[in-house]
Image 1: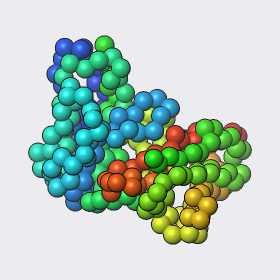
Image 2: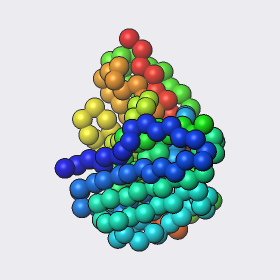
Image 3: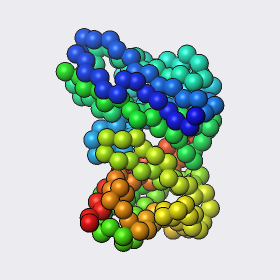
Length: 113
Length: 111
């Protein structure tokens, strides 16, 4: 299995809702990432987990809460989001500490009303 | 700081060859990667250059000159499906997990 899967593909939520994005990989990668991408911009790193421990938090607002239940799964819990948080949310995985290649999932298109 | 520069847009004709350039500024260098992203899709890893020279993978090749802080992606025998955004990326000098992406080059292949 050489892919990263993400659910849901699309999500529309109000500013008072709580929702979660899910990501799964079975490539044995021990580093997993959350990125946010706005239209016509490169991906922006949000969080990195290494060996199920949070390794990097790029000063992301607390309304985004990551969770890594095990080495294959990564969640992003969303609460009280703002309309400007509307974006494509990408999950990625890699061999630990790989500055060479990361494997991205198809993303969740999030719209906050 | 670290930064990468690449052209914002390139247009080419089907069947032609196109080169997408990337110049970078970084105090610690750990190689240059290239990613392709179709509209609405996910970035896909294309190639990596850790040393100077040319790496070839089918119709795509990537080149690196560390002395010039410069690399390029070469796409040959262009096909309509190559229309996409292409990002160059380097590893962050302070973190082996973090990629610094260029702003992306939008390639439009015309018939």
